[in-house]
Image (tube, rainbow, N blue to C red):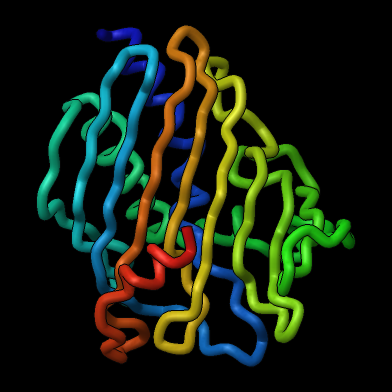
Amino acid sequence: MRRLAVLFGAITMATVFVMAEPAPTPAADEPLVTYRGTRHLEGRNERYNVSGWMEIAAELSPDGFHYRVINEGGSDLIRGRVFRSMLEDEEQIFANGDLSRSSFTATNYDLSAAPASEPGLVKLFARPKRKDVTLIDGAVYITDTDADLVRVEGRLAKNPSFWTRRVDVVKQYARVGGLRVPIRIESTAQIRFAGTSTMTMTYDYEMINGVNVGASRGIVASAR
């Protein structure tokens, strides 16, 4: 069990920067500065047949990011070593103002055209400018009418530890209250001696930049 705790701990840093990073903000858009809502987290490892889930209240304010557990169940190991560690790291990232390290900007990425893949979407290859655990080597999907970000997917540019062979990430976005925000994140990590571990996080927004937007779970469901 101690080995399993170490292995699960290895995927925390693999996803925390991806979780913390807000959606890239077009110049014409209002930046995301505050929000309040809930998140649902699920994690599973097939080889050890363990799984866990957690429902949290989440808030971003001028004081930083903070969360509170509403309900939870399943593996203590996943809830403690993965979920809580990841959320506490997210709090620290916002407190340190360290978001630029993983932000989707020209400083961190080179973009190039890719073959068309889905109706209504334009695909761009996104190549990180450095090997960094906070960056994704993959593709960006934007709408073909107004270049609105819909999805980012790929593999972490650098494995976070010896224990992690690779981490694949899919991050989905939608407009809620007129702003582009993350609504669902999926990560699949291949871990030495532990096989495949999966984690998903879905976002439900109640307030964005001081404006009540109501529950957004329907948006999350339709984006799957």
